[in-house]
Image (tube, rainbow, N blue to C red):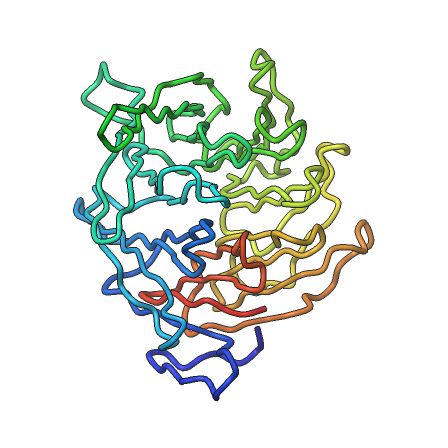
Length: 354
């Protein structure tokens, strides 16, 4: 990861015996959602979702051919409306079916095959109405991959349970049911994320248009804890838990140029503000292998890696910077290959060695 951008549309072959630091894939449309596969047999596989302002959108699955050093298109499927988020099943051992989930008008779970991807189930918690409340985001529980949580503009979060049924002589069928639905915020809920605290299965947090971060426990849903409220009540768009220390999480407000780091042991008071940004922040990714490194991306084409180990002292500058050829709207740090970060801008996806 460097301060030098790669030239758009140019792919350079690495010198013999040396891997490239950057690999690029050009999609036929603007890329918005994107995520890494975590299966050990698909190391450099990613899914990309289109952002086209019409009903018909697409999801592509691509993987890096390590011999040619180029991304190869694997498969494509249609998706109603743009995907607000997509995630592969958090299955680092490769023991579950190869599943991909997407959120948009509904939560959908897809089975990925070598040549085609098919819809396994559509999870709809509003069957009594012709209208649906779009889903803004979701998270897939790493400890129990049968649990997913969604956030919606209707102020609710829904926890779904997945089942894989075994029918003799057939591929296992995947289905889902509502485990619980709760009114999480006073206004739209924009993001949800499970915490690794307390065993990693039951605790999650959400952020929303009311400007608050709220924490919930599936074992005690009669109450929630407000961890933070934006002083100006600006909507909070994203939250991300530290992957190594579940006491810390990061969030960001709409149109804000800073990332706020919170400690759940000290509610309502940020322990750090990362504000060396000259444009609004679009995404946040914590390092999967380190408790003190975090990488936001933003509108000024930059992804910055910060070292926060000196908290609560002020952190002035990032330790690494990468400048892309466009506004970075998505960032994901690979959980199984922590040397690699993926970013999206315009119709490009790049993976960067850090």
